Amino acid sequence: MFVHNADIAAIFNQIADLLEIKGDHPFRIGAYRNAARTLATLATSVQTMIEEKRDLKDLPGIGLDLSAKITEIVTTGNCALHEQLRREMPPLLSALLTVPGLGPKRVKTLYQEAHIESIDQLYRAAGAGQISQIRGFGKRVEQRILESVRAQRSK
Image 1 (cartoon, rainbow, N blue to C red):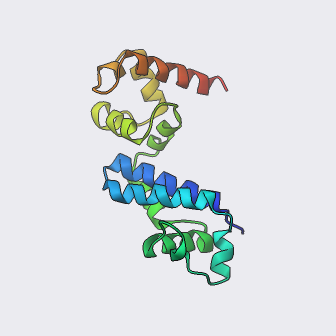
Image 2 (cartoon, rainbow, N blue to C red):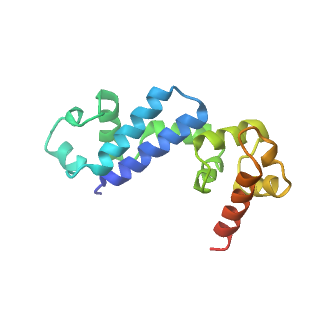
């Protein structure tokens, strides 16, 4: 099975999102985002680099830990940290990240302040005017959430 750099970059971006929702250290979150950018723009396949026994730590922003995770993904198709973070979060919480305008910080706020864990709960709360009552959200954000969820549902 061939693993594309974009696939690894996507996993690293998801790890960064989950770490951000969890409230992890910003430096760690940034390291995963930087590594994802490096991998997404890299002309050479990291799988080929691994097969050729080239040192991934020579890539910008890739240290020992991230190099090991890239190798793990290439060799097994999975990343233990990614799986662990997904198990720690409510299963539908990451679906909130698919709503335009909701990034990890807003998802974290919705989860902590209003106990919103799913798109259905988000839609109901926005329809009831509860989202605009949360600090950092307003009527316009609430309206955009309603429109975005409606658009997603109509597809």
